[in-house]
Image (cartoon, rainbow, N blue to C red; front, side, top):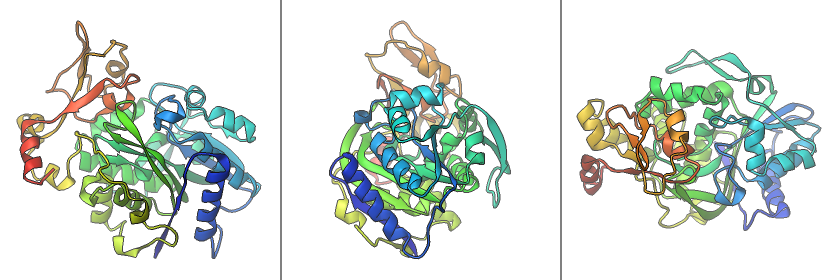
Length: 378
């Protein structure tokens, strides 16, 4: 039976967070330690953009502080890293308020600038993949995602967080190779199993709802720290807390299909998901149930445009060019007042919504998607 330890946090004060993490780890490590003493630990945080902690876009610095202290108390050599879009790890760590914590606690910043190739065992789609060197060099990887909505996968949680092990703009090429969201989710699971985090510490204190996972979404207090060895089980707990069905989160749908997740085997020795469930958590307009997506011939251009949400920029666009630079399909160009999106070239990866530093990118539903929603298919 897989254990998922959910603890309530009322704020991000250090004492509150440390107490919650310690309680969760004591529960999970009753029989034996998950992370051994005196090992090299990489804390793989969510560092998509250099956003301030109150925006809830990145793993909160105090969650990182608590993890650093916990593992350093075991004599571990602790480093912290991720690979944001188009930025150095150090710049993003500074912007997110994590670098001062790293310095204060005597940890290290892991630069995700050099790559190595790792093999993917029991693969579904890929046999090998290039990841940041610190991922391969660590003895133990502790995965530290942030609970946020996502236009492609429904939610971005523990499994999706390991996508940041791929360096910078190279992530865009995987969106091109795997434009179908279910196939993309299979790739994410391949990657996650290759990286093999031994522990997942999900920051569900202040979550993102609506048009996440960055500035387009809205912060909302959930007050949960979700910890477990199995990322699929941790993700399933987060989905239950926020009112998502399994088929509304594509990585969970694939995990169930492939037998990596058996919902009946999950136990909750501390809080249950229902204890901290939040009502009317706003989902992304871009997301659809996996079953609905695969039941339409949306690979045809007409149906793709009709059944999937299309990104667009609102009147507050300042033409900064970030989305143009990072669009995997090259579907965005500069217009007279805002960026323009070529719907025929757009692959609906929603990277533009994810990386927009001004929160002006959103999505509009295709007309058939609206019909599917009324019929309960989306």
